[in-house]
Length: 115
Length: 112
Image (cartoon, rainbow over all chains, first blue to last red; front, side):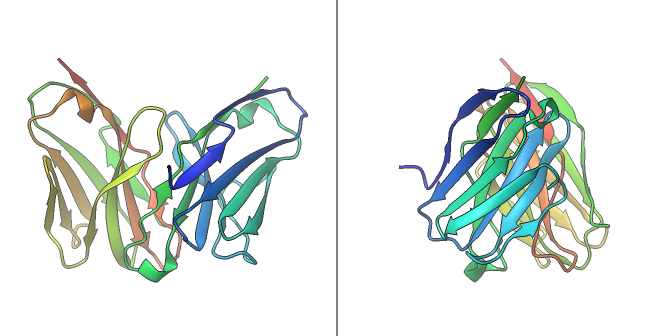
């Protein structure tokens, strides 16, 4: 079984709809991240969480919100989706106990299309 | 501002040939540098990590180098295979942040 899972894998929605992307991990990592990827722009950080009670904005948090329901679950919400939020979204985890190594483990991605 | 620049943006090579991808960074102080491989439609996977004291590290046909003085790294791929077709992302940790700085990646296409 995959260590980091994302649901749904693909989603098509309409402008103005609320949508939630979910991420679960079985790696036991304390840190979780949400990124979006657009062609030519690379991965950009939306939000990150270093433990259940910690939520931090990344470089492109406007229009998004997150919830860390448990150490293993981190959800990303688009309150009112707009077409320029069409992108590939990745969840990632890392382990603070391996601070010097900082390897991030990525989920398989969610392809979101906003019409 | 912490920045990571990668070149070239894209590269096309024939199967069996070698290639080198470049990464320049301004992140300071430096902690470590990772190269990730991202297959189309999948999440990135770490290939190698380099810390300040390391100049070269190999992972099979992949060899990464680091020059911490000039703040440059390279990823050399030897005897390329079709499966090497992917995006290669340079990620640098440091600059007083707990968040890594990502480059935009180099898209490599290997043709038969």
